[in-house]
Image 1 (tube, rainbow, N blue to C red):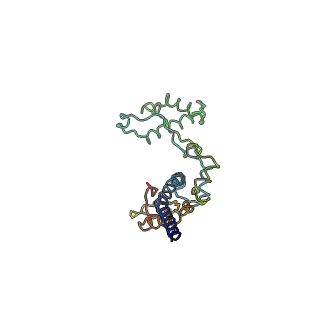
Image 2: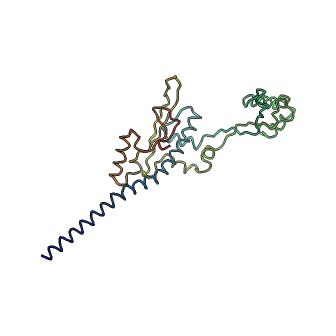
Image 3: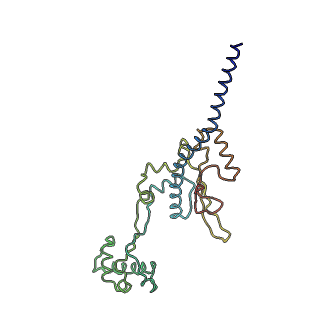
Length: 256
């Protein structure tokens, strides 16, 4: 009798321990899942933002987005980045007199062309400093409009350096098209370069996506299923993405 009672007590104790373990897991598993998800999404978002930067520059130079990630990488590695270098600014008095950036640049360009045509001056078109010094000092139209010290030059910079400030080189830039924690999967990219608004304005669109399954597949399966189901019922994309191929949203991320 005592042995039977001891067996029952042991069985109940084991059952209680098992129940306690399940209770603890039911609380800690979702917490661990969300913590890991949050940590991973920092890296996923980083790549999506950098990929968006590349797509926006590609669109700026070519007038359309691209769904070809290999072409996008080639563009980042080989295309120059043109930037307007500015020196000096227009005063309120100049602006009130009707002078603006466009007019000032036109005056400077005309003065530079005039100076370079004068063979007696023997100015080197590549020596921008000497060219500007001459027109600031000698061109009547430049002096009349008070544009001494005002300078605007379009220069070509290294694309990767200009866009990412040295964060990537020609090898490491390949990583921005890959979804972190996905074992090498690429972001899903779609474009809609022919989207037209109700006002008849053409607005090229792009969308880059990382579904939850791509970077959370090695975590708790049930928690992943619950997450996808929850977002789907809310009519949200089940993952992270930037842009939208069905409506302009200024290329925003769905976490922003």
